[in-house]
Amino acid sequence: MIKKIKTFAFYLSVVLLCIVPVSVFLWMFMTGLKSQADNLSIPPKIFFSPTLNNFKDVFGQGNFTKYLLNSSIVASLSVLVALLFGLPSSYAIAKYRMHKIGLVLLIARMVPFISYLIPWFIVFRSLHLIDTYVALVTTHLIITLPFVIWIMVNFFEGIPASLEEAARVDGCTIFQAFIRILLPSVRNGILTAGILSFIFSWNQFLFSLILSGSSTMTVPVAVFQFISYDEINWGGLAAAASVITIPPLIMTVFIQKYMIKGLTTGAVKG
Image 1 (cartoon, rainbow, N blue to C red):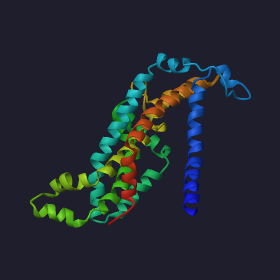
Image 2 (cartoon, one colour):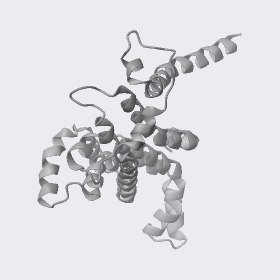
Image 3 (spheres, rainbow, N blue to C red):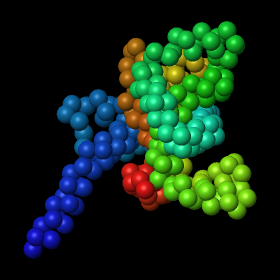
């Protein structure tokens, strides 16, 4: 009897925790299916005639497909560069116990992003890099690189030192042991850090708003265009928001078991 009560309490708590995020997403999707008149009605309409006009307008007006491509390029490159530099850095921090450096990186990640805007803008304007992928990818590294390092340090600390020593005895160099032995051992952590970093980069708005232009505009900035001084296009805004939510959602659904393994493995050392 007690076991059944605990099981019921567990599933009830899961349902209660899921109600808020799921209801918000459903409300957003329903808003995208409403006409502007239905969205402005008071009280809000629960029952209405759905329409796909808002979704058609999102892709029919402007270059929303191009903005999706820009976000994909910027997020993917920022994650790849963060992994390229973050994995060796986290390995060095874990091996040589340089936790103060890790703390500095974490503080850099916690500093409000607006603090970086003016210096970044001055630097990139002087280098004629405004509205380029180089500027956006570089600024997004402030988000992805510390995050990758901070997650992966725990994974590398959890690998027994004897594993690397055995590889060195077999004739591997440090680089070969890192590539062939250590990285496969922390693949769940790499996947977890990569997916979460991609989502954070994909949703970044502030840097893209200031440093992008018509050529490199990302979807969070494009969604902002549905808000004007005259009115807010609630249907278009919700439809665009629903569209840009889909890629991270699909990635999370298909790779969730690896992310759970990665998060739980990284929480246990030894």
